Length: 190
Image 1 (cartoon, rainbow, N blue to C red):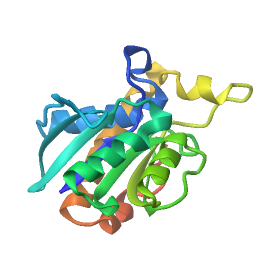
Image 2 (cartoon, one colour):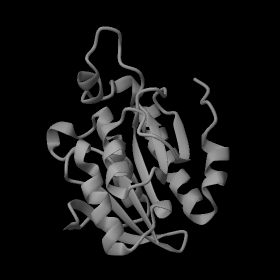
Image 3 (cartoon, rainbow, N blue to C red):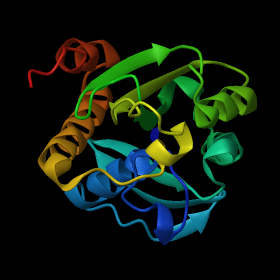
C-alpha cells in the first residue's frame, strides 16, 4: 500500500497557486485513476483506490503547509505504512516550471512542509516528487511568489508537469523509484 500526499494550503484563495501544485497533482491523480477524494479524515481530504494493482491513499492535508507533518503522521499510523511507501509531492522554486526532481530521501531544503513531515515522521527517508514552480522574480517576496498563480502562458507547461507527476507516481508504484528517477530527473528542453 502507498500513501500519496500532495502538499498545499486549504481554501479557495490558494487553489491553483504555485505552493498548491501538490494539491493539483492529487486532483490530477484522482481524475486519472477515478479515485474520488470523498473523505475527511486524519486532518486531510482523501480517497482510496488502486494504481498499478496496488492499494493507494491520495491525500491533501488540511493543516496548512507548515503543519503538513501532523496529517502525514496520522495517515502513516492509521494505515500502518512505512515512510518508504509515502510519496510526497510538493513545489520547488529551484526548478524551472514543468521540471520534476524525484528523490528517495533528503533534507527539507528550506521547505517548511517537508520540514514538518521530517519532524513528525522522525526520518527524512521517504520518496518525494519536487515539481518545479520557477524561481521568484528579483525584488519579489518569496511568500508572494509561491502564493501567486501561474501566468496563463505557463498553463500547458503546468498541465504537462501534472501529467508527468502522475506518470512518475505510477512508475514508482508499479516498478521502482529508481526507474522513475531515470525517466523524470532529466532536464526538460524548453
